[in-house]
Length: 94
Image (cartoon, rainbow, N blue to C red; front, side):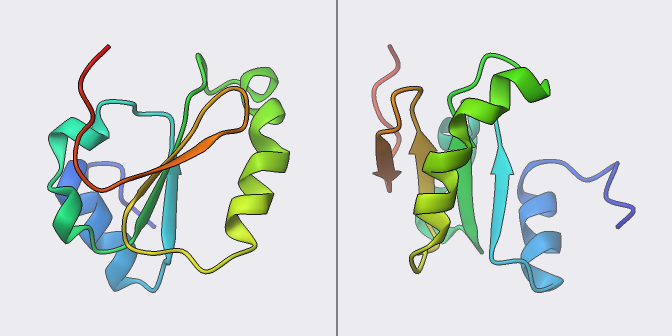
């Protein structure tokens, strides 16, 4: 897609503009860096410690369950235990 240089809002806008419905990441700070009320697509954040396959595989069943339903243009945060939070305003930092 040649999006290597795009960051933050520009990346989200490019993905939405090219017809993507959602973007998946492990960037836990995105909820504090973006205006969650104006997201151009769904953003799904995995609470993973690494983006290595061994760190992402445990999230697969939870991700598939979430993606099996219609998604809103909000941030979804999938926790390690499988709980999914629909985040529309930034949560207090831990």
